Picture (spheres, helix red, strand yellow):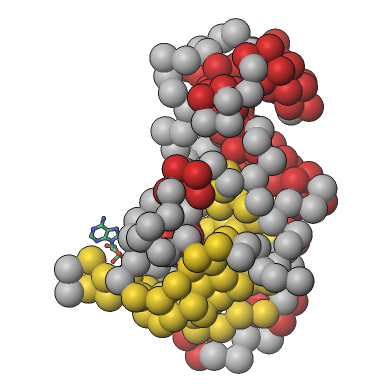
Length: 246
Ligand SMILES: Nc1ncnc2c1ncn2[C@@H]1O[C@H](COP(=O)(O)OP(=O)(O)OP(=O)(O)O)[C@@H](O)[C@H]1O
Ligand SMILES: [Mg+2]
């Protein structure tokens, strides 16, 4: 079985600053991966290059069998196969909730409007927000907006979901409802790579935790190992810091 996503020797620099260095990383189907690491360690950059939102300077990235780092690829077609959710500003404020959810289905995947709406309503129903379908995003709480953004990301059955700190802009009482939805997607067999600072969530939901340190994968393993028995001094230092903040 081939990996859903595979990075080989990926290097990314902004100017003279190397942000990702010789990253080798593969994600298997149905795998849930938590990316952890200090601010500036390269988590968002890794998600951006994997989602073809930033070019790389060296190496290769494969989505399934396809080399998506080949400059000749159709970037829009590749991005249409990936569901991406960021920390904030995910929904278009001038579009109703249902139109946010169905936008790509209608315009990128060329689904008939009626079928897209039916599928969008079904997903909104599932997250308990169908009554807001014809509201504008500013009527929803941050947690509700983020759940709509997740539903939009899964609308077209993407091969891969990339989540970047999707709860970090939320008030603490709203975090749980978003994490519940991620938990459900994971249980349904989605393939997810998520940057997170919610260590307890990473421990509970991720199959594998990847610790990024200054653009390098310093250590990775199942959560019980990485959190319970980290092998690297840098990992131990990082974990002791976040535990103090926790
Ligand atoms: N567009 C950019 N131009 C220049 N430098 C950038 C750019 N984006 C990120 N960087 C730099 O790349 C490094 C990695 O940033 P990145 O956002 O990937 O870190 P991160 O691990 O996601 O951090 P955080 O936990 O704060 O979100 C940082 O030093 C950052 O300043
Ligand atoms: Mg980040």
